[in-house]
Length: 239
Ligand SMILES: [Zn+2]
Image 1: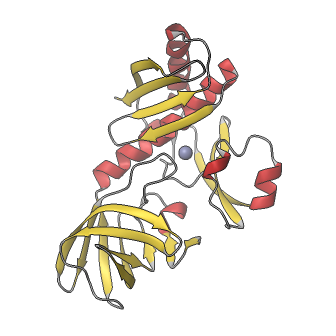
Image 2: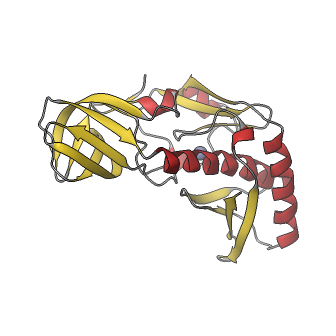
Image 3: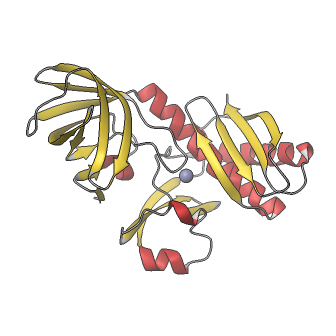
């Protein structure tokens, strides 16, 4: 089980956990740090989960979760529970499951675009509604993106397993291709989580994914934007 500060990150091993019990470790401005959580905090190009925490003073909305060196901070709307009490947390699962599907779709599409165009991903934003992804491409060719999306959708339909494993940091750094965005590797973590879309892609990654690509659905291109000489932006959603 991996921890960030005081908080065990339950979603790393099982992205399908929707509720949990945890102890309040610390209260901070407008929020709490718990000893464990299923809330994936904002980061790694993904928006934060939302949901609620039920405790002795009532039910509080989790507006956002953010990570710092003390753990995952759950920012609350409503009363703040007491330090030491055991609370119950509940994810907004509809939203989270959409984020998982979008996130796995991003890994599949990015792999195909990278292989076909020899580019890199320079940034991305995954929400429950759509994905934005930037590629280091000089030329802007709609047809190439449309072909990539067609191939990605074929791959998704193959029902590839999405496998979670762990690997020592040194080994990750010495294995070519495992680190896609070096600046996003969490600092000071000796063992990293590896997400493998079997037969297609493998990389160090801390975000929630579906278990099988058959859960994703179909990628639909919504917009292409020229964001500069060597930056082309793609927006997609799922149906
Ligand atoms: Zn990812």
